Length: 185
Ligand SMILES: NC(=O)c1ccc[n+]([C@@H]2O[C@H](COP(=O)([O-])OP(=O)(O)OC[C@H]3O[C@@H](n4cnc5c(N)ncnc54)[C@H](O)[C@@H]3O)[C@@H](O)[C@H]2O)c1
Image 1 (cartoon, rainbow, N blue to C red):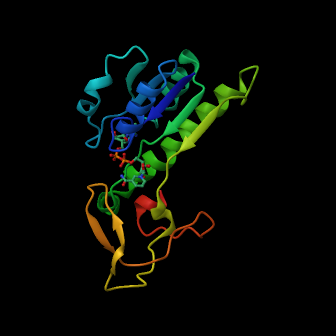
Image 2 (image 1 turned 60 degrees about the vertical axis):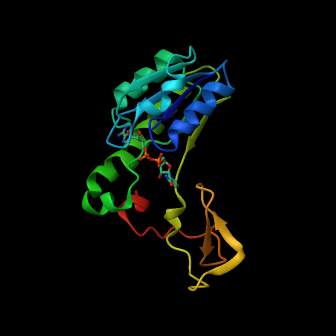
Image 3 (image 1 turned 180 degrees about the vertical axis):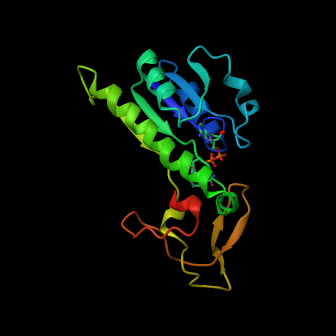
């Protein structure tokens, strides 16, 4: 199994790449990342010499490079995390967000479609996962503006407990209500 993970030098992608490289020694992981200001390969030092790991510096918008990589490396799956991901930057520079998040995703989808349709087995055993954000659904109502006291707190990744300001959740059947160029893209 050969898998492309895009954005593998980013905040979340780094962990996904490390997990796959360590957990699935029989899979080959290709980390495709342009290394924008948000990418940092230093976070993958511990796995960079593993035999089932290859870093490819590339822009996901570069269809020819992505398509050639899929053909050359016989890619079976794509886990797509490469994105422009910071809300404030998206308000100042929406073009970069539309380019990477919309056109870059389209470039990956089209390369995967064309490559997989060219194979005798076609889509059998092939997967394309696109990581999105709950921000596509907009903002949750603050049903308790003063915060809910313990034990109804939320736990942050740092381990700290924060007061929860509402008891509503996003679900996948809600309408999209993006509030920024980031979440729209
Ligand atoms: N961080 C969060 O809290 C969070 C929450 C929900 C959803 N997400 C989603 O998860 C995904 C990853 O988020 P993150 O926080 O790891 O982002 P990040 O900004 O930390 O990393 C993005 C990575 O993508 C790379 N990249 C950017 N443009 C590229 C391009 N054109 N071609 C190739 N590589 C490119 C960057 O170099 C970087 O390594 C995004 O889709 C984001 O919307 C993140």
